[in-house]
Length: 184
Image (cartoon, one colour):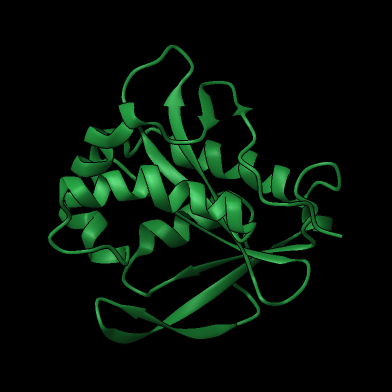
């Protein structure tokens, strides 16, 4: 049986992953106003201070309370601003979850999200962690950085699985990559 989706403190060589706090609200606001983030993540537009407060104070705690999803905030071990956020969401299919993320523009190109994605994926697939059997990653063609990130973390897209996602009110075809417990 899959464990409840609780935010667990995780650490990597360079990062600390934990629940977002009020201190992260200014960085959530700035990151989610970024044109690249807005293009590929289904966010409110315009993204306001109230949107960032809702994300930190309501959306993230609701995921844990509902046992449907959890969100980790990424920070460097030595502190500093929020680098991004990574979410694991329980799928309708038993034993399966989907992941999604965004990075602040100031954090891109340093491998932080790949490092965090590997740590969260291993935790999500570990029997002593979240206990999922399979993780899924969706990307919309054109968002090649999303595909490269998933591949670097071990997700495979060779099965040709596709789905339809809604992005800014438009139905778009997405590719689905998978990572199974046996793959790690």
